Every structure is written in structure tokens, then in C-alpha cells.
Image (tube, rainbow, N blue to C red):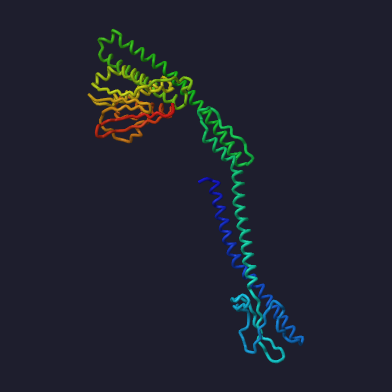
Length: 424
């Protein structure tokens, strides 16, 4: 959930609760306040009557304008009470507040009742209640809106930092260089992120240089060892020593394997570090690359008695690709189809404008298909392959924004690797 939304939600819940409590207090408190005011006026009227009688004057028939007076020689219940009386003008019952008290006017005790209409006070109370609730609602709404506006302005530096982090690419070899906002906490956050990105860039550059230097330093000794072993195999002295010949042959085989592993790891490192310049990309026709690779693999297909079915769509458009990456992609896909095939099996290559599919026969493979693209993952532990072919394929596809997917048709025992072309 968005932080601003969460903050606004809490403020809204708080203000809603306050509005409900304030509304309840106004709804109950305002009528009580008006009733209390009416009771005080009735009490004042009683005191005025008692003073009038005490001064020797008679009780009036119509009392003090705002009051109604009822006299009775019969005892009545004393105190305050509410009643309804018929309004002859409106022809409806009207609420009254009344005060009953005993008074001795000289001719014996009487029970007097002072009444005051509540119609106007209740109407005034409703108006006041609406005005106060409306003002309170507008005040609370204004607080929420103002808080959201202020919070949005205050959190704007954080949103800017977050946007920079989303688009930050370490492979650009530049630190973040975030500005210093006026808010202390955000300024400290940006400062810490700037320091972190500077260390990351320095470590990344150091690792990249180490990888390039190590690759260069290893390549030359491997080439020398391989050349010397090949030269040693041609020595006449080994022709009569079968054990030594076998030993040198194993050394040459392991050296070649180590050389292939070095080349594969170097290629993966360059792919991960985005070291292939876009300027080196040229228009490449995948069907021509495919034909060239199949021509080189033709002797191997004949030795393993593998049938090849090639389906190439006509008039395929070129893709702007790096020649070395394109050749490596096609080579690893075809070698995987040959390596994991069965004797007298089949390879089906289908190339269209949107995808490249290479299928091969073979037994079912256990395990998670997603792990097939992991480094050093082998279907056969005894294989001489370093287990980097499909990982290289996946990294090349990711480099160009393509998708690679593995599928297995159980009924036909067909393994399929499908490369879906995206941006090129």
C-alpha cells in the first residue's frame, strides 16, 4: 500500500471517529443545554411570582408574555415535567416544558403551573446542530485534505529517490548522485545511498577488471599447454610408449575441456556485465547462421545417424545482433539437441519471423525444467560438458530481450527449446 494512502487512511479513520463522537455529543448535549436554559427561565418566572405575592399584589391572569400560567386549588405533582398541549392556531399538539409549585396567595394555597413552549427552542436547536455539524465536517475534511497535500509535498524527495533507484543500472558505472533535500531524514537517506552506490560502482569495476585480467592471463597459458601437448603427441618417442601416449592424450583432452569452460565462463561474464557494445551489432540472417552451423555438424549427424528436418520460413527479416553472440546461441542450441539425442533419433529445426524452435528426440528427463538453465547443471553427471550451454543461451536471450522456454512432449519423447523473439 502506498505510504501516503496509508497515512491518509489513518487520518480519515481518526477524523471519522472524532466526527462521530462530536456529533453524538452535540446531538445529546445541545437539547440538554436548551432544556436547562428553559428550566432556568421557568424558575425565574416562579421567583417573580413569589416576589409579587410577597409584596401583596395579586397574581396576573396572563403572565410575563412568554409564559402560560395554570392555577388549581387541587394538589398537583411538583417539579419540572414535559407535556403536550393543543395549539388552536396550528391545530396540533405542541411540546411544552412546565414547572409546578405550591404558592399561598392569601386565600389559601394554590398549585401553580408555569409553561413555556419548546417549539422555537427545538427549531433553534436543530438549526444550531446542523450548522455545528456542517462546520465540524468541513473542518475535519479540510484537515484530511490539507494533511494529504502537505504529506505529498513532504514525501516528494522520497518519491524522487525511489524513482531514481528503480531506474538505476550499476552497469552504467556511475553512482546515484542523489540531491540533498531540505528534510534531514531524507538528506541522510540520500547521502547513505550515494555512498553505497559509490562503493558498489568501485567494487563492480574492480571485479570487472579482475575478470578481464584473469581471463586474459588464463587464455594464453591454456593455449600454450594445448599446443605443446598436441606437439608432444606427434613425437616419435611416444609411438612405442602406449602408457605415456594415453596419459598425454588424457591431458590434452582435459586441457581442451578446461579451455571450453574458460571460454564459456568468459562469455557469461561479458554478458552479465553488458560488455558487448551495441555498435558491434550488425544485421544478421538467422537462417544463414543456422545453415552454416548445420553444415559443420553434418559429419557428427552422420556418425550418430541423426535425421534432420529443417523448416525455414521464406523472406525472414534480419535481426541486429552481435555476430559472436548469434553464432554462440545457434551453436549451443544445436549441440544440446545432438548431445541429448538418442541413436537414430531426429532433430527438427523451425525458424519463423517470431521464434526459433529446435526439437530433438530423447528420453524423459527428471527434475525442474527451470533448473536446466542453471550453470553447471548436467543431465548426465559423467558428461564431459561443463553444463553451461543452456545458461549461455538464456543469458544471450535475456541480453536481447527474448524469451527461451523448454517443453517436453511425453507421447513423442520430444524435447523442445523455443526462443521467442522480442525486441531486436
